[in-house]
Image 1: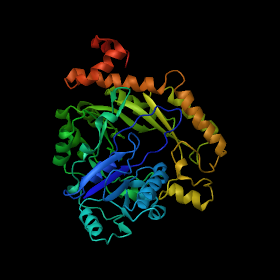
Image 2: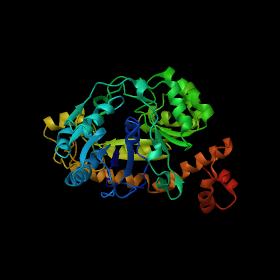
Image 3: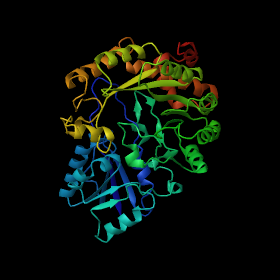
Image 4: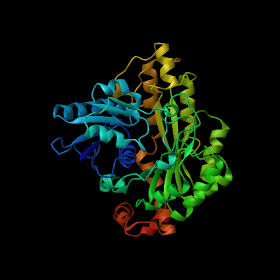
Length: 428
């Protein structure tokens, strides 16, 4: 049996540096498919779907709300060709009822230990309309290494720069942030994978650069310490969400190869300023993630926040507008208050205002979002700041012997044949 697995494309936000990372959800899911099934994978963001390519069964994996309408189009095309289609992934769970109108089946929840049933049903022509395992998490020990062999690694680079591979060491999140759907999707319980399996998968990933996509690493101090200690000998260079604000843990993270972190910047307090500085003290870069349009923000608050960002030495900043995704408290509140005016899921990209803010007009919030990007990157482009961070990681790779020769052409092109010139760059 041939199973065609597709990751639909979505429109990137205008004015921002565009690059594609290898998708994580589809290849984690693919690891749960019975071994006798041949899986063929297409990431439509970097490849064109060949609808004539022979297959028996089609799966569509969707992560973002901005993918769902394209996912439905792809499914409709395959179903007209007589193929049965099953959907899964984060945005399938968030948009299940609508997605059921375009599918033969939807799978809700985590797939480990459950796909034998689905494929047996397909073979017996008894495919169920819905496989609902929401809140019924499989044993975390069942999570195996992702099927990274399914994608073409050469397609994931930006102007010759090797992009990161994605990896996760845990599921679930004990936090429940206002605009976030993670507690609905993965539960409020922190579920770490067995450490031996984590290390085994990490060691097997060919790419030296990783994005650890766990919702937060700052969930359990002892686990975080053990993880970083185990990672030190692997010499990986990695990006993650928040690391615990603890000198011992930050020091171990730096030794383990922490490259930079995504850190929420939610106010102009000394704590945030010092938090960023503490990361930098350990050689860890910071990309601030800044949410605009919260109910407690007015126009002056947002402008003060942007001014503050320019003073705290962020390496990068990513601005998003508050977006009421389904199955979040933000969605429930705004729906009840009749504040959502746009339900076109293509617009739910965290860069387009789809609701009425409390302290300004929707147009003013959109204007401030554009102002934030232009102001922060007025003196140095986003791409230039990204190259500065890339330079840091190349220096570290050169120092510990993990720098790969296939990157040398980029280095030569950008800085001349004398690679030692990297060390002269002002990258502190």
